[in-house]
Image 1 (cartoon, rainbow, N blue to C red):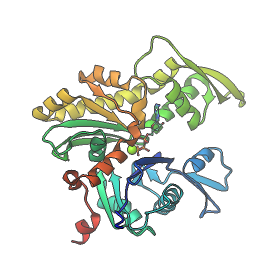
Image 2 (tube, rainbow, N blue to C red; image 1 turned 180 degrees about the vertical axis):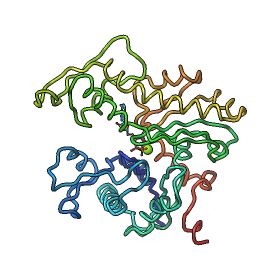
Image 3 (tube, rainbow, N blue to C red; image 1 turned 90 degrees about the vertical axis):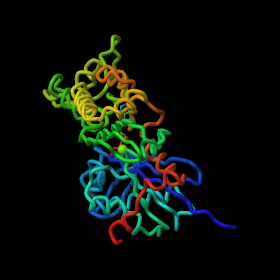
Image 4 (cartoon, rainbow, N blue to C red; image 1 turned 60 degrees about the vertical axis):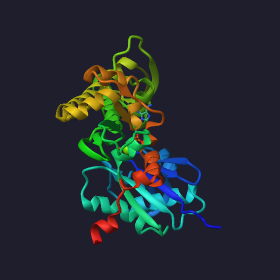
Length: 341
Ligand SMILES: Nc1ncnc2c1ncn2[C@@H]1O[C@H](COP(=O)(O)OP(=O)(O)OP(=O)(O)O)[C@@H](O)[C@H]1O
Ligand SMILES: [Mg+2]
């Protein structure tokens, strides 16, 4: 029996680590978080480590090894990816093929870190390929990335927002903003502190964003009860927060993204702009799930906006399409041949 090589597509996000496994067609999604005790002993990883975030005693260090889309802590990233693969992928991992999504506009050294993470791993892969995230994202959306048609993809993740115009399998224009879901959470935290003297944690801010966040002012207010610490008394209190408060807190961040999209549109060559007007703007990434974000972008640009299901997984699904389809495979590259040729 000939055993075909298994393929893993990997998107190491700042917040979520996604792995697509070709053998079963499933996506594994774990928080890209690690908990370390005694300086170098693994205590927990993934979702379990994230559950400890902002709750652990000093002896346990909970951290995110990817920052602003690049690997900031190589050793912990290596431990973490190894543990995640061990947990979710029981067989066919040795000698598998890996394809890893990398942000555009990072240095060769930063790219090499993504490559080495797999190439030098104990999994002894058959090959390691890299692919630019926006290209993977577009493939995941089912777009024919090789065609001479312009597409605009806006991926709004946790640390970054990447605005890209692609055509013929390459990037024509792009802009990387260091603004994503985490910054939006921080804006909610500072807004509550400034206006209500209430200190809340990041998870609470994220909960408010996901429950009540909306990109346009809503006519009917919704609300949620949260617990924070009152700055004046220093004691924990319960407070009801309304959706209009959350809207006020996050609207400047969303406007910054709108302005960046407008700038890219202004720079887009007219023939490509025509394609984008025809097909609409595509929004992906977990933060594209903010309610009515498509309406806001449409209002600002006058262009139709397309949303998708599971927007945080579109890049990782696209990676699989790229390695599995001969006509897309050339969109991936290996660092080995690039560097040591
Ligand atoms: N329903 C929702 N409404 C608003 N934001 C959401 C929602 N669900 C998830 N998010 C946000 O999506 C973000 C995670 O998305 P994603 O997995 O695409 O990021 P990432 O790939 O880890 O980050 P990056 O691409 O910046 O490296 C988090 O900031 C999370 O708060
Ligand atoms: Mg991402």
